[in-house]
Length: 469
Image 1: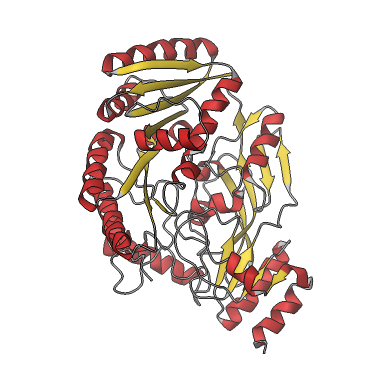
Image 2: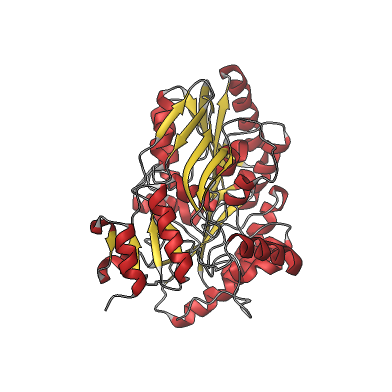
């Protein structure tokens, strides 16, 4: 028998093909790229801000949890419907992708795939730098919810650095606009920055205004091969302290190198301890000099080889292989726990040592890759959730990874968000008062706590990650 709010929802979304109720459909919306499986009561697929507003008014009136969701690529549990209720799938909101050449901005709908925006902008001769590895799958709305990053965060920053304005439906179903279309906007509180990275806990984004920049004149990629992981860390510090600012600088350890070569061979050296992938962009003359300096510096520190890729095809091959690291390591064991602990750049070698100690202490498959240039590492643990003994060790290992990052002056997340996976550790980073301030903001915006509950904030008494059922 239908609940009262189910019948009302049918009147809000009149196209019944956009309300999913079958068990198989509901189960398919119950997981993301992280850990855990939950089942919502309804999945709705709005196509307009007005439909979003009506869904939220209904949910707020009946205190129904609502979970905004893009393509479900989140790695921290952000869209998981942990308390049932409604999953609000924004993937059908794709009507706008407007590029304003005079003002170097783009106005887009939240369901647009991020790579489609980048391609459209590129055709006009402009550049939208944020490039999460999932860009060919994830939506721009999801990127904004998690404040996603990617390799080019080193020079260009994360998604939030390119959001000028938002249209947002509040938890009470009101439509508001934050920011605007100007590069400068300091009027009042910066609500745009508050919404970006709020993981769908404060409302639903229904339109985004993005800042674009001119496309760099030239781009070159380098591959530096190291027989010692520590040397690769020292090379990172050396390059950055020399005054050169690469657009991206990625580190891949030997476990990930071999996983990629077993998955889809790209020519990475399988006998190396680590490789650095470095991208330079800008004026061709400046890049020419930077290549010379980086080559010399890496070899002096210990690189056994430094290769440059100038042609676009060669560069694409190197970077496409980098994007295959995540699917490649997922072949090692059936369950992948992917973290994005971030430390100050000077602490990268020390963080590697801590990760190695954790790997040996708990006897687990722990591999590391990431955006080394900005200290954003991706320790990944490959395990099998059916192995209860191993999962217990993984729980303790994950806790120690977060503790190590915070001890070294870092943070729980550089680009994946908090979701369910890191909520237990929030107070450790922010302190009681800092976390309480965030909670009070949430309570004001969402007095009935319908927006994505049990995310970001730990439940009472929750102080550690629990992966076992």
